[in-house]
Length: 331
Ligand code: TYM
Image (cartoon, rainbow, N blue to C red):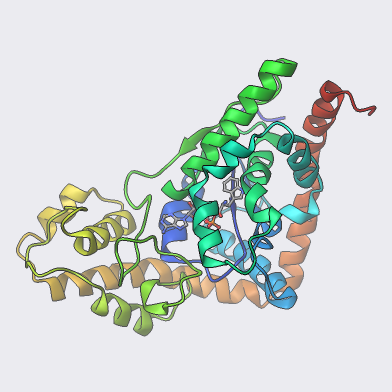
């Protein structure tokens, strides 16, 4: 076993991943792979809380794996795997649900939000979703969890569940820390910058996907909402559109907001928007090319999933056994 600290994170295969997913999560994953022992999961169990087409779901699971690789994750260094192929997630999820209060789940903003958007299918899975997420993280005794801002509340719940379990049964779980990027922790919609950029948005002008073609990306940035002033200045309250674009530029270029403000202090909005679009295209083009190559080799992706499910199980199974023993199951 490695003495490096352990990282776990997951991405749902529930749609085409966006620039928000890239900047908030995937871009950071590859920066951590040398210093930590990393598990990056394609969380297909989570994605069925919203109705999925079976064939499309399979394809999207391969697509997330292909994007992990295309974003620079080394398949030997990292355990890149599919959640449904490691049964411990569902098993621990059940157990932890019995140590989670309805009051806690009622407070989850993502549940409230998704219930509003899928009013015809407010199912039990949508409600207990954060418990399964806690199980994902705790099953591997993960030290750190790289996520965007929107998952912070879920991580706090995972910490509470872990502490509660440890208090009852003695030291079992590691209490995980969130790792949230300084810039672009919450990439906003291009047309409605008061809401999060999301892959499930009905209006395609609100988001850019990681594999989108350059002309379409440029068109969307040109159209991005700004404000009636003319100064490129960071002010999330009064200038949410411009601030979002500044965040995107800073994150893509790996520079600070201050450096971004300085670079564009005399620029017009039109020129600034083009610069942001170009920077995004430059960052995403090599990823798209690699992704297209990988998606032509499903056999390889499949073999990676299979191999890595075994690697993940080697870590997951002892934890599950320990938990079952402590609870009083005969193991
Ligand atoms: P998901 O699939 O919605 O998103 C994957 C990652 O992308 C981040 N993200 C964003 N970051 C910045 N700006 C945005 N607009 C944006 N949209 C998405 C998310 O914060 C996330 O880090 N519940 C999780 C998946 C999950 C998970 C886990 C994550 C399941 N188990 C265990 C970490 C650990 C989710 O729905 O992410």
